[in-house]
Image 1: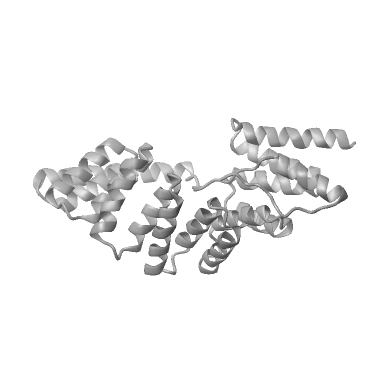
Image 2 (image 1 turned 180 degrees about the vertical axis):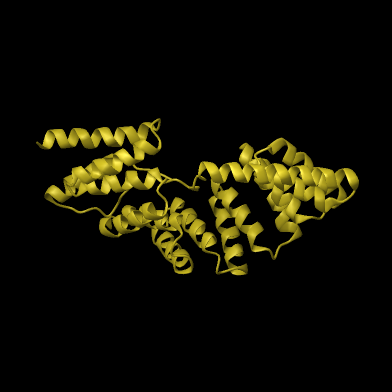
Length: 287
């Protein structure tokens, strides 16, 4: 989602700084995940391997039990063995064709494989089989949004929220979808709802900050994005937005620190490097 800052200030140095911020062409990130510490990752891997071994043994003892096949499929999915996960979800469906959770699992597996069409087709089946389960509507909405089918996504987000209005992530991602549609006020409203339900939702702070930035509300944007980076120290896009905001206020030292953080998190990202270099250039020319 490209962040274009509007409603900018209209005079003198403030206008020039705002245009400099705009020239950084900052961008949002849709879903940000925290990285597990190495020791935790090793333990998780061992647990997943043990689960796979256990469920495979259970299936050998009773191959017609769909529950064990579903559990094995989920273990494969957690372990990143996507082809095996797909095979086991399909095997479970042969035994129990109306299991919405199997279709949800297939959708997740195909989404991770990058096959959004298959992911959407399968989650649509889950919605059909269990229309009153908010999590299926939410997953469908997220995938439709990812596939840029925003009008359909909005309807699914609304369905998910109607079924469970206390899901912070539903409000958060609905807000992001509204932002993609250009409804920035709607995005701000939904992100605030998400944070009223979960004030430690880092992504909601990020989306709120990016929305404020688009409205030209730099102080509000700075506060939301700073809170995001306190909760999620891996969000390079948030650091990049903070760099742009600080640079627009003439605080190039702070801007460079933020930009360096973004680059350190993803040194191969050309946009982050370009932002840092623009700030360095601006610092040099202002001396």
